[in-house]
Length: 627
Image (cartoon, rainbow, N blue to C red; front, side, top):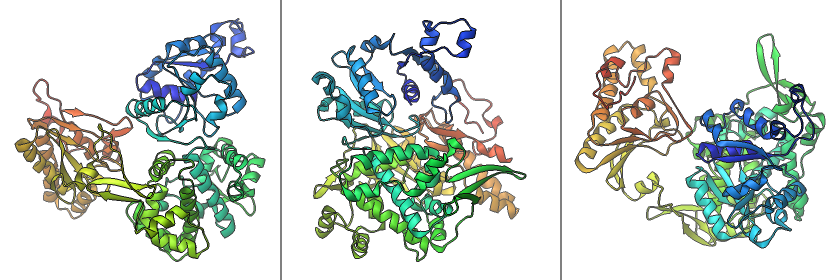
């Protein structure tokens, strides 16, 4: 984990020292080379090994392997004094309080005033770690919980202790967001902090509901994946990926530290998890967990665990009206409503899991985090939920669902009942074009960073210049207009192409620059190939030619536009999405952008940007749009 954090710092252009312990014995290869324990290559072996391993890690921790040159390996005995040269020390040793205290004591020997020190921990108390350290050291010490893998997981929990200087926290939030690209949640110094506290509770609630209802592994993951606005790995596949032994350690952290009997019962690991751990079936790293991959005559096959017999059986896809309705629905809100609106056992399973998670999240406001917004952000960024708990509660109807919980004997927290009694129908609402959220009995306006533009907020404020079913042109100020796609999956069809042409003319008359960007899940998954396929199947070749020509002519307008055009792709920018970006004067990509003309892989010639020869005679200084 320490090496992966260093890799992400290097991605941001930050030179790093990577220090590890000194080995107490020679490896076989070292003996063969005639090295001794005093040799630098031996003393730095662990850091050198971690650095050498990074390029082969999947998913890749570096944007480019060349960034490895920014990381200098060393060891804690010979090089610890060099922390006087740096601005931030991140301790990322084993998750044991005694070991962390020992390392922090050694760090303080070389600490200088102003040096920030943090512990990367998933749940150990920051205050307890700092015991025995000086007051100036404590003022510069906090927890920094990077979620794994650090390059890809957006969440960074910053955890100040009681003696941490607030100015240090403010500075670290600013640095982590602006330089490292993190989504920061400031957590309270409580067991497992925010995301792991809620996420672990939800996973255990799911396992308890699974056992109570006699559900299979396949049924649980069918209900708790995309049907609830969560990743495809759902619950049990996620446990296999994390490691059941790791999960038990995290759950036990709350179980041992809570004095609340109800919470202790909720965090007691179920019999099934203990049995899997005892058998060594701890997930993917052991080759077996809730799922097991086996090789057969017809190739590899994924088997799922039968908890009743503790044997592996062929996976079966669950079928039910509520699951079908959720699959057909569009977006996390509608999928969840469709799933819960069913009358079958899958709808009931989803409700039993969801209501417990929502109530627990509400109970922890003020204890683990300061607001509903913090908890929602933590779950979106740390567990990849599309909606946080309070956003989900709004989606299914706050008052109605709370009444159902009470009718079923589930106690709704008092502050939520008071909120509803005051006439509020949701935890979030728009006020005069700005988002506000429930905070201490009133709505609090969501703070907007001065360097951040929210297209949704601008649309709420009436800043839309032109719009149709596929795209909108939005005035973002400073002489710039943003062209936003909002078709399904942001696929390019006639509406978007028409709006591109209209946007060029509007910007030519009234603006200084055009930016092509959006806040969708993906920038653009390509052109609407289904439309082309239907025309081709009907042998309407003139229509096929017209569609391609419209795309090409529109891209030519972008390429030849005399005012600056900036494309800002994110996540997936595929096929036509790439061809929209290539004519721009500048492409400002999010670091995690998957950008390519993938249609070539299925035998289609990318033609939206005009055929290659059409741009063969570019003038000096021009860049072709490809195709």
